[in-house]
Amino acid sequence: MTTGLKKRPRTKTKRGSSSTPCSVHDCSACKIRDLTFCAGIEANELSDLSSISRRMLFAKRHIIFQEGDEANAVFNVTRGTVRLFKMTQDGRRQVTGFLLPGDFLGLASRSGYATSAEAITEVELCRFESDKLETLFERNRQLERRLFEIVDDELAVAQDQMLLLGRKTARERMASFLINLSEREEIRGGRDGAVYLPMVREDIADYLGLTIETVCRTLSQLKREGLIRQSAGHEFELLSNQGLLEMSGPT
Image: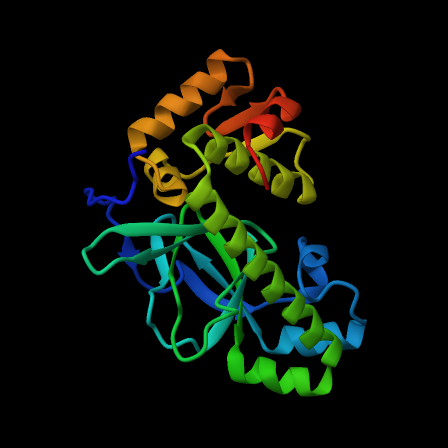
């Protein structure tokens, strides 16, 4: 099987700060609060969290941080889609994940960020300075425990990705990818079986370890077989969850 990890011309990205100035984030008014580590905490605790958070906006294709940058903050995605990626020594890119509202960036980082993060769409983030967050955890162990649970979930996702790249065929990888995105969309209030793919085919290829041609060919095959349908633009509908589950192979 051919691999997607080859040098390709890259879409120009922009390095810079948010498109609008940072502002204090009101955690009590957060629309995705139930998806984050602050779910279920008391009003006074939300006030403490709001005091150390800042709202940031990034335009499409802006770099949020780069691999190796000082990891002095963690971020919660509140709107939009973020791409995480690493560059190999020979200049190839490996996409390591796509983050949706409710997901965190930079949790597992210590001295420097382990990946780069880029806005695929316009993205809104909630930024927490690491030292202030640690101080808050000293007063609120419930928040700390919840954040550790999120880190554990991230590790499980990384293990699933290793299985995806190491042992599955192109069709199995694509089926697994679509099912996973559909489940994540449903948790966030999306329609059952609906999938939104704002990323380009190159991103999907670099995530699944395939070529762009293989990604396009596999999606076309799934459409012809009546398993998926492109409803509009970046929106897809999974027409047979059972068929895709069977195709996705062992978990």
